[in-house]
Image (cartoon, rainbow, N blue to C red; front, side):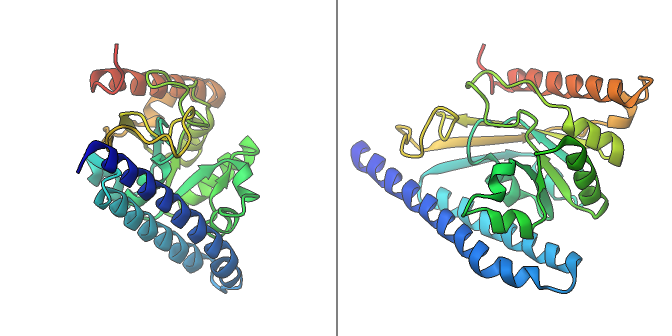
Length: 262
């Protein structure tokens, strides 16, 4: 296919995918959420909703690859499917990161921006799936710990928003560290890279790169939060040390694996 025609095709396919995502989110909020809200058994309701979200995002990711919009390379993806509760901590270069992680991780729960509770396309989804709001740190830690106790994997982007530049991360917030210490849960670092850059903080959806972008995920070995915490006298100091250790670990591995360019 000529380069110009390929670009137009990917632009149209990208736009159509965003429309499908938005419409499906709206329909979920309008049709599924009212039904889910009267479901008598909360545990089975949440399991059903998270399963639907997982299948939907798996389908959307597969469609984006089939349409030639993106390519997906995954290293050690089986670590996301063990079924054991853990805290997935990832850098956040693109808008698609959460979609891909939810597509790869069954029984997953997310920490999301509180603004999504008012978003017409997302409010029903985040409520029905019992995602965790980042509005108040104490409630965030309690809610996330409860989800881990129920067997869910927590997906957290400790930068809080998409990365500021291709080779730089925002400072990590300590929420994930407090959750790990409270719930005694392992931390699973995930490296994410997008080449060429797409759906970054500085780009709109229609800023389609000149060729299909390749999204790479590298799932690293788990980090034992308790072992790091044991070296410190208080929870606050342990959480600070754990946050710094994980942030340094992810930054260094991004360099080691060539996701950051020196």
